[in-house]
Image 1: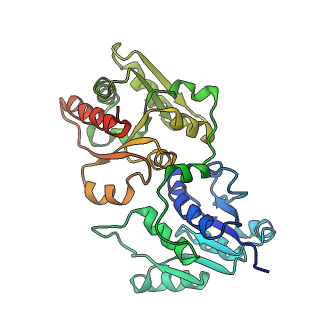
Image 2 (image 1 turned 30 degrees about the vertical axis):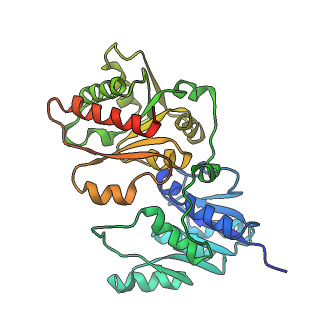
Length: 333
């Protein structure tokens, strides 16, 4: 009788980084149709996945890794995909007892670190220690770990398959996003001399150029003040502006799923929205745009990557029109 596969993902960082692992999970599901899945997550990304990931183990960076030993052993994991380079991630993968553990190592570029990495793995996958001028997309890089565990090419790209891994909760809280143009509001908007006033002008110009008359500003708890500051400075020409802040992760996913498109400055929201199949306009700072957009652009769905230049007078109108045209392209309006 063939052994039942129980596959563990180890990802200890943010929401967007965890979402980048979804094609790898889908590839392993296709390779092992009867497999069940678990994940070791951070407090930040623990509620990202749907019940396709049956077991969620939450690791707090302040706790000893040994605290999770019993609950990991109880799942009888057979394969572990260690999609992190944090020391705790390697230790947790080994602690799981999975006989096949795939993770990254750096060869001779960092010999001492690499030797330690290899001691925690039995399926090492080489990854350069330093950035390269023309990188693979991060999803493709992570999928190499899945291939080492038995997944096959090509990397899954269809949103209808990828979105099923996400815990999307449609709720009344997300209703204002239905049919609206969404902006993820974050301090990243304020790099390069941008301010809440100029950001409000950019949003207003984008809304006018896109043809949509409603906008929703999505924000985390820490960015809620910035979102309301932008709203207060929006002109009356925008018919409706809603702020959705401090939503639970599943409800935030529901809001992204309701919106007609998302505009964001290189945040995890771009990766999540792409996996949902939403249209995404992803803005990257001008410095190193080519490399960053090549490695981090939204994986699935329709998307456009634009340069976010340093602010100067009149830029809001020019960039707003560009984003509005990109909205048309990704929504086929």
